[in-house]
Length: 541
Image (cartoon, rainbow, N blue to C red; front, side, top):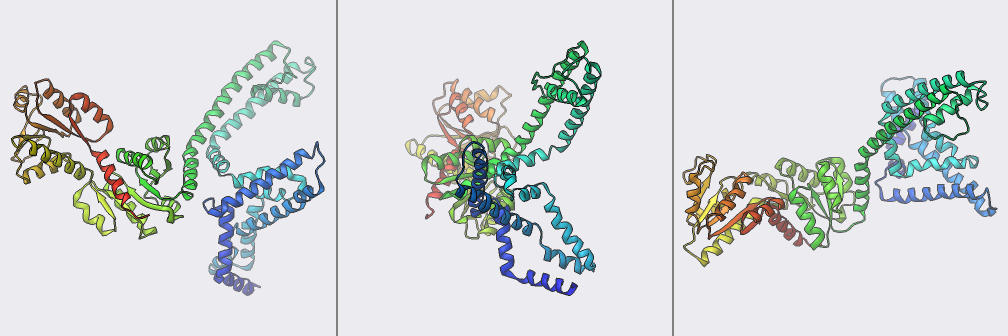
């Protein structure tokens, strides 16, 4: 017998056809992400609702025998088949047999383990519901099977299950209070109140009172009873507030999961999808341009809750999660033929590189564009197959540089003054120097560079320096944004006749810089977003 069992387990393990059928069945019944599961779920939901509707209508109308036959026999048979299939996929018996055999377990122990595993499903809550739903006399139970097919209901029930401690605590208090109130009212009013003839009546009154339902069929007639009733009502209101807060908290924790699930399902039905990993300033601008100026469909991946909510509020399909997560990538790449390109827009190069590796591991031919924050990492991006690397600072520096050249062509005596020699402007200043342009560079931070002139905005002497630049082309690119605004204002109030260029990195700062007096604003992220859109347009659909 033992030898036969082991041989059978080995045959099942090596039977590819059997394994594929079981895998297909398991995904059909349990995996909400497969394309065919949603159709199966829809059919089962219709059958359940149809059965419940026939049960209800049968109380007042005569149902045709053909419809009753479908309800009593056809639907019951389908539910029986589903029950047996769920019983089958609940565990891999052959795997358990081989594992126990390798550990030298006896035949009795092997049978006990198999029995124990299968019996666990039979007596689980879902197993009992599935079993009872087979029988026509328990048709009303079939409504509970909706738990299997409605992802939202399952998710919310999981959320409530995580609040097990809170609900247990509430249950203990309710039992104690209801029993106490019932005991008091029974002792005080039994024999006086004609509506309280047993302790069950007292329990019923206590529960109705604490729940604040108050049917009015039992009311206290003594002063003590009325005081107990008032306490019960006050306590009931407090308990309702507690339950509400616990449930709202539980649902809020799972709401992002529901929203993400909905977005992923919607993603599968779209064409020309562009995935955006990150919804910071750059991501939001790109998403805006994709939505307003292209025929592509934008899907945002964002792990920051506030940014995720902003993306959702802007009507973008939003996946709340880490784009570097294997699970997230597996879900979005299930229908990879509809993904046109992926853009990773994190400020961290490490996060971007890891995202690209993750994407390429699923499809080495996937098109991935990336933002780069540190130019010295360009080789790392190239080595992993990044299709295009875009440096936001390089973009804005090139635009500003060509603007400067254009101004110099109009007036070759124009002098250029750059305020700031940090990441925001260093490359631009160096480009001007390399081109032989007469440029003065000021910074309030010690740079240890000979051609950078120090300026102290706390010292009044800086005002004299600014007055001497009244006809220059000024570039405001200090690390401290407040100084950029102050600089623009100070120039304008001192009869400044030149032009002020500002390098900005947010829309809000653009408005402030405009009010401060900036004539031309080069938006770091807006200019970069346009470059990403330009690169997307080059992809052959």
